[in-house]
Amino acid sequence: MLVNFRVENFKSFKDMTEFSMEATKLKNLKDSNTFDVNNISLLKSAVVYGANASGKSSLLDAMATMKEIIEDSISIEKTDNFQAQPFLLNSETANKETLFEIEFIIEDIIYRYGFEIATNSDILKEWLYQKKLQPKARERQLFKREKQQLIGVLFKEGQRLIDKTRENALFLSVVAQFNGDISEKILSWFKQFNYISNTRSDEFKHYSFNKLEDSEFKEKIVTLIKNADVGISDISKKKISYEELKKDNPNLDELPKFLIEEMKSKGLSSIETSHIQYKEENIFNKFIPFSLKMESDGTQKLLALSAPIIETLINGEILMVDELDNSLHTELVQGLVHLFNSKETNPNHAQLIFTTHDTNLLNQELFRRDQIWFTEKDIYGASELYSLVEYGKGRTRDDLVLEKNYLNGKFGAVPHISSLDYKVQ
Image (tube, rainbow, N blue to C red; front, side, top):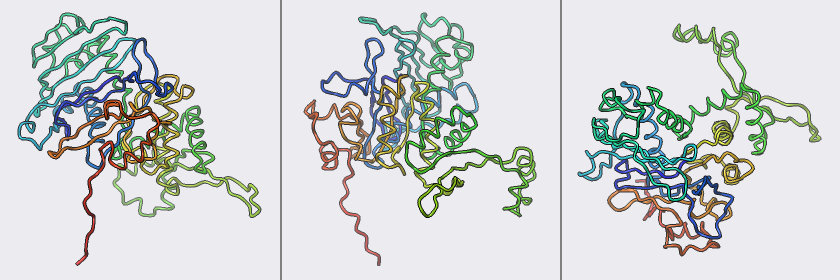
């Protein structure tokens, strides 16, 4: 479970910025949207609003980048290719290190892990702390690294491994390679921390389509799609042979030989949806197949999201989605959020974090105030992140109409557009 995340000097986030999934102790908030792990209460979902280019996507990208550096740190080739993305609009930060820190829970222990990475990809500092989720428990430092010097005798699994750690590699990732118990658990936790961006939507689309080959998982996907009321009765994944492809594509032989050989041996996969065809009297006639390209953009996006959402709920994982509302109806997005907020459909404490422009979601029947976040840029181009519960020092009422007040600029995080008039000469 994710507790907190901090980032400094990454893209538009110049100063230390904290995002939290820890529930506040305000009264009259929806308890169904939270879950408890011993003495800590966490949120099941969170939404981030803000104007275009205000930093919404950069916040999710910061978390995804931290995960990427951790997982790629094992590979020399991948780590060398990491491109630092500091805040460039200030001369002091343009060449300064970037900081990532995250707090999360594994087996009733809260870990705090972070590192500072230079613009040349060298790791300047790295640290790991742990604390048992018990009253009056104290945080313990497992290790602290400063360049190639290691401090911390409590991290026994990492003894004598600092010499095997490259300057541009994370010590934690190296220890995990040598079967360190705590390190392996932490890296496994990051594998359950997934990010869907618009630029990577095809990757998750293929993942969802591949899950259709699992009959039990396919049933869950079809049920989700049916409940979304998009007119689909069934979904199937079919193999198309090279001979079948050639009938509709006579120039197929002009492709490179290695592609032709691969298609001959493996074929290609095709996704078909099934719709009901009616007779004139509105009586059922038969099911007819639709190719995927015949479906709307919204239906295709829902299909792409289906497997990650279902798997996240089943395994109690964390899912971040950039612009969840893109091509999806407001009520459908509300339904997806409800899957995470509900005790019945989210018994394993999965967490959803997403960005959106859909102000119809801004209501206190769907979200607690501490689940709603805003990003806004100052006049110097730096992003600020704050939650609704922080706004006005607690003066936001439980019955306040959020959408109207947000659009009127009460909470900030809206674009300031003077004019979009443009005259064609």
